[in-house]
Length: 108
Image (cartoon, rainbow, N blue to C red; front, side, top):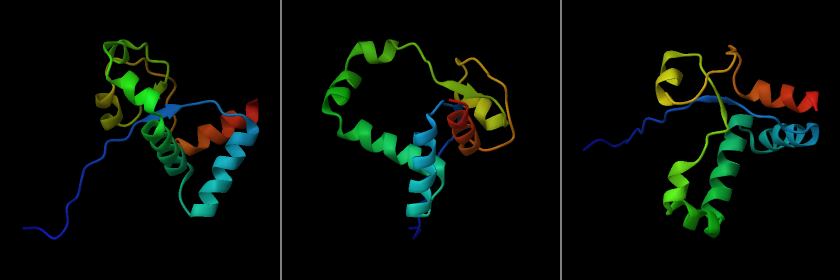
């Protein structure tokens, strides 16, 4: 029996828009916990999704499976392209998802 269990996690890149203050706070919180901005957003969303009982009830309905995707998924690496085949590609960039969040926040 192995001593370690490694789980494979698939990631994709998506573009979101944030206000200047939110982008700054994401970066500040990342510095505070010594993590990346990507990790802050990922964990914050997972926390909210898990705590929201109404959302958990919604996920059990057929309506939850018939949503219209609005997240702008970026195509880049080969593994990203295979993860969300039904989504429309947007302009790809070589920078990590952290940079668009900060850049998008500064445009507002």
